[in-house]
Length: 267
Length: 267
Image 1: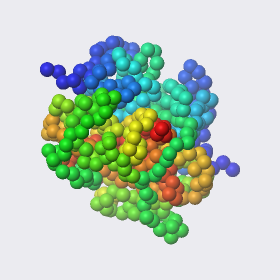
Image 2: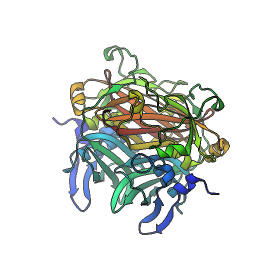
Image 3: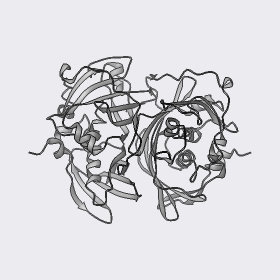
């Protein structure tokens, strides 16, 4: 049986050349307040590049800019491998819907090279996943039902002077982790301004960048368990804030992620 | 007299349409080991967008992907304002040299809106700039001579298990801070792998993302003083590492920045 996430990131070929275009369809299980959950949009891009006939290696970096709301229904993804080097490959992409460009972005893929390595960051100290209760988001955040999320700090009902949220997270139902799923998880943090004010307000990601530290082998070793996700903001002001996040598998740092978010003052 | 930084980011018009193209020329004062200092390349893109006739507001976010080395000499910058919304504007760009695409990227510009604000991060505790000695980089890092840099921790001759560098930084000679100069400063951190190993090795930025928290007024208030720059890596491995950095003006967080860097094992 196909997992609902795989349904959501599925693509059909439209044109191989001169522009390589594939088509996605938004999935009701991953709807957000306005349009689809941006994490699934980003995951669909990663899926599209991974299936491109010229792809080299695995994802290293992704930047996606959400230029306009995506409406429910079909959208087209144009992918271009701009430059292929010996060990990495640079991509540009555009998402179009009804003759409008609604998202743009770039990606870097690359091969795994054996080098010295070290992880300087440390995962947050948290209780085991089974000791933390799953929580629900309000019904209007439909995509959240497609995740099992267990907040250690900074849940969606909390109000805090510290914008940090830390939680256990996995797809619901459970699904083995891969690059598209990890991509979506890096956009799973609800807007940090909600947490600072203890209330909802208009807010949405403008641009998201994720760096993939994990190898395919590390994702396979993780399996379908919960990852540990943590994020916080550095500065709020003038209608925007940033967010820095990390996704962990035990002591393996799978991804670091950053985004800039638009918000309006709470009512 | 024109400051050398303004010489380095200068642009001349090539074509207004159908593709908007301007031309830059690498400047010997900002050369790096191979090609120009990436920070000046990024700054030139910001300068180009700021001078575009359709620009809306000030920089909010920039992602630049260094796909191939840029040779000394002229390079062309193609800029496209893909979407202009009420308060923000999405850009894509490509840098071309000798019929090759050598860099790609995206930017978001926007207008300043008055909202609630708060800075959660705090600047590192450091001695005053006058109490810290300026340091020199080796001659083969030519661009570093165009900066006055005073390391509090993590200088280029240091070796540490902590990849953090924190330093006072300004243009040399002094120059009032603006968005292009701030952009360049967010790429001024030497590769974190040098600090971990206490030695040089092949390394170069693959992709850089900077979020601009500062308003033009905050930059004007900063003037030509030193900013405080700090950066560290989270994970090294498989030929890459990430870097997270912040640029401060007293207690005003001007920018947060992230990059993914390619490296080879030290000899």
